[in-house]
Image (tube, rainbow, N blue to C red; front, side):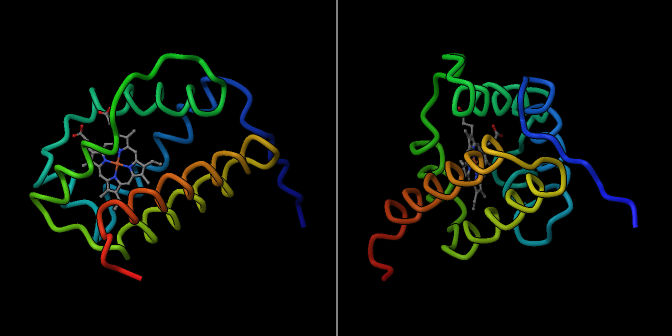
Length: 130
Ligand code: HEM
């Protein structure tokens, strides 16, 4: 059996591949795609570069992202009633994308950061949930 050699995330080209691959999954996903296509009416040409900068900032401390994801997701929740399980599913898709493409410390950090941000979002959006 051929061993696949995965490398860690080391540069902005890696981030682009991760982000592009992740949102390809999101676009095909039965429970999450409509939030982008119907609720936010996402312009992918604008959103993807924002996400490159977001992840470059989180993983390489580039200082290139200035935004307020919490506020944006609060608004989204207001318009579309997100569910806690959507965040778990988002994380499943994100983590599987990372694992399919990369392996290493930065890849692990990407998964950890995503999980902790999703956990904070869930606590803020669903304060009544246990
Ligand atoms: C149920 C889970 C989630 C859904 C449905 C969701 C959906 C969305 C949508 C629709 C947008 C707006 C795209 C546009 O500009 O049209 C957005 C933006 C964004 N999301 Fe999420 N998201 C989820 C979870 C997360 C998580 C866990 C993170 C962080 C790890 C995250 C990070 C971001 C960021 C950074 C932006 C861009 C904000 C900006 O414009 O500055 N999202 N998301």
